[in-house]
Image (cartoon, rainbow, N blue to C red; front, side, top):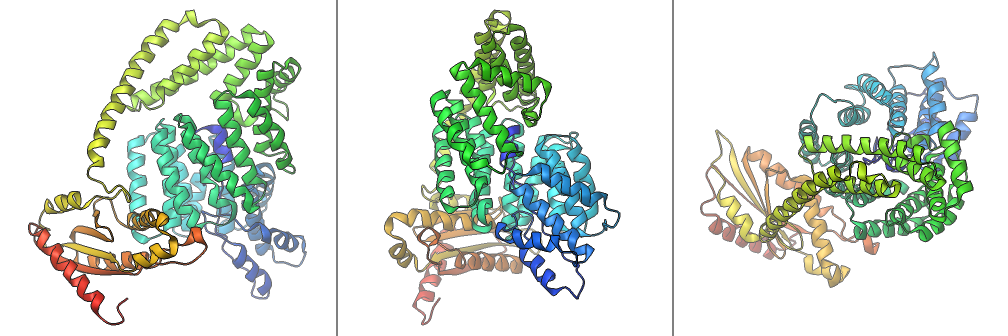
Length: 602
């Protein structure tokens, strides 16, 4: 499963799944074998749309082996899910899983089971847990990508007996494991799951940070529209935390992505985000323009979730314009659960709010009150869950929504005082929380480099000097990295892009290092890394991997050119503490200086 925020209807928009289809084809079909090798992708990406016509031609042929047909069929359903055609994908998956010739030991079968679970996930249907559990068993010790994705799905949505704190701890352990391996696509996927979990407990600010990391890492590794899929998750969290200015920047990124002609899916993301932005700000005239401009882009996607989202915004416009005929048709369709109803939103708070406001506009006070009461009950359950976990971010906005609806219905006097008193207490708690956080951030800011956000020289040195002596036969280790060609990089990129290049270099360090490591920028072109209580050879290998990663960091992507970092490194290993750190750094700096004077130094 991939990219799938905490709010249900956005969950459906932001999903992009991919599966690594393994091949076990007959030896006499090399063309099919070669094709499947070309079309297959890692779990965290999507099949290339340009290969779909050839894939369909293979499936239309009567001469391909049955095993190849199953594998290509699973790849096709993967692509259908990526493009938002969930109904068609589910039909094809059901056929494959019901076929008695399908081999349950093969990758395609486990992949199809996982896909079925993912579709239920999109629908917020708890049947997802059964399929995720089955996919995990089928792929255990055989198919790492499916096994990991199924495990993450179970952890996030199904293991209710495990606390959010325990789940976060497990996710961060996985993050450390795959970061240490340098597996950035998987690291991006795990950041996404951490964001989902933060979103589920109301920590939307933290969720947005995780989704940004997903986008930044995924953009370097994924293809086509998949590069931009996590932006919807970022947008959702920003809107949920009322960060409208930042949300508008995400909309601009999606608008730029549309210029790449990546298909209607990117247009759907853009128009959904733009519509949700104007809907949140209650800008009816702008929302009406979104509804008008969007429709042309979901031709061929009428059975998908995007048509439903378009209908949601259209109904919001009908409320804004007091179009009673439109609203009458909407409530009849919703309450009869007809084919055009917003069934994917059923039970969602925004859906309940929409129904309450529609009935209110139609003058049906009883129905409006019923949906308001249901809405309020869900909000209070969510509030209780957040409070029981000590999570207060976003709580005030939940009560402000309740208060707004109650005012519209003229029944606020029934429980206004209770809501106000509770809300005041919550708002004061939030104010105190942010005041404390602001003060703490001010103190922390003095310890961090303003460009790279790494520890500055003084803070890094102070922290390293406090490191304890290593245990047993282990060591403490330092590495000083010098960016030998950074002046040349500045010339090629332009001085205005120097900070961005340094931030990219800092991100390379962050993606590989662990939370226990001490990393700082101690000079304009020098970075210091300290590893504690570690085997000497392991430390040296770790430092070499970082230097290799630096040399393979392309700083010229935005310019369309390849610019790499040429770094030199000095290593110091000790079985003691760093009480003489300043002298050690001086010696390491001298060593780097001598290296730079050597002929043919790289």
